[in-house]
Length: 615
Image (tube, rainbow, N blue to C red; front, side, top):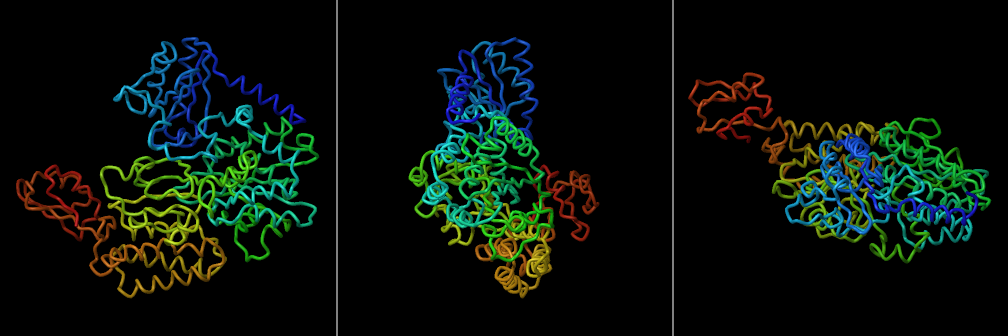
């Protein structure tokens, strides 16, 4: 493919091939979430049953994350002139029945759909509350196209933005459009993308680089992985545009090896783009050359920091360095380097095609556009959501997420992962953008949003994140290497009921010192979960330290299991206790030896009379 006219002709042909005609298009969610839920046997069952019936005009394709992970495996069926039908919680047996009743006889299986046939309406996922407040820019192709078919990407305006940039715009014009859009880096820092590009563009060097940071390491975050799995060509196209804008001819995608599906689909996409002349020499006869390579990371959280990432690509140990010099001036192998994360880059093609004003029509003045969040934890509708900046936390958690399951009360939401902080009920009406989240003591981060309910202990939550950070510290600077360990030790004393009152003040002081003196963002933000939980839930810390009690009943060392007077002496608890801590005669009240008890709760689970309580 040498010219724009050839690209447009290919797009026209691809659109025709996508037309279902008189048949069906069966789309199976085959992102990591779908695969882990059992999507592979579902897809095989569809193909096998369709072949058995020899059904004509039925196409079965894979797609990326459809969004509502709680419903996986998800299958969507498209037919001309009809509403799509979404089937949820699929398995091989259900798939066979859908082929027989829906694809062969034309009657959808209502009980497998979103409403389960209860309302008599075959609603698809787009009809439910989860999607009504979403705006999809980054995820526009995820769940719709086959990520391993470049034709389907091109049919959806793929590589049109790159063609526009390479043949109709100057480098300066490209940067100006991105800058005017107000796009801020979605990796956490929120720095202006266009401004960052403008720093590298004027630099004189024999080689410049564009790097895609796909080292997504936050616990509970899966936004970047889902984009790579569902729309890999969008990232390649964005890197071509960025390379052209700053004068780079080489790009690297730094992705963690724990993302095998993403890596596989990226490799396929790169080969397809090369075969079609969209990567390599003289792209679209523009005179611009650009190549992309994949570099696998070993899963070090610190390599999400740009200077540590650079060191890793260079074959060195992933450790941060002081800035300046900034990578835009002196980065990979000492050359000017621009590093953007996956979500940031996924916005670029649409901004160029539709314009900066279009992008600014979403979001807020200081934070235009949308943000992708991974909803997890104690939330009814776990999944991937893309919402306009400025939407409130309450809307995301309740209108989209469905609130906490089982009637439990919402307690807090942790945004920004180990680098962020917890947000409580009083701030739920805060509009989400970079500056507002910082103002209430948290941060956007890459987009993880973990909800906790009344059953969670906030001290234990802080301990969990500190345990992660201690493991992931590169060890270069003393405040992070030693300070986070001391913080974790203190939190472990608190959750074990062995801390002294003065330990709380020492913990707060240590956290503040680490925040101010660490070398890179990992150490500087590591104390955030501790500082925010101490600010909003000081009463829980005091209960652990002064009363030797965990209000949420989570910290095992502070739990006691008590047998009430209503005990009938049935001996079920005795049989279940793994350490023989329960004694008593048949048909008489039993007792628990607290010195022997390991706080496992097996006795309370076994008691059918609810005669055992946890205090």
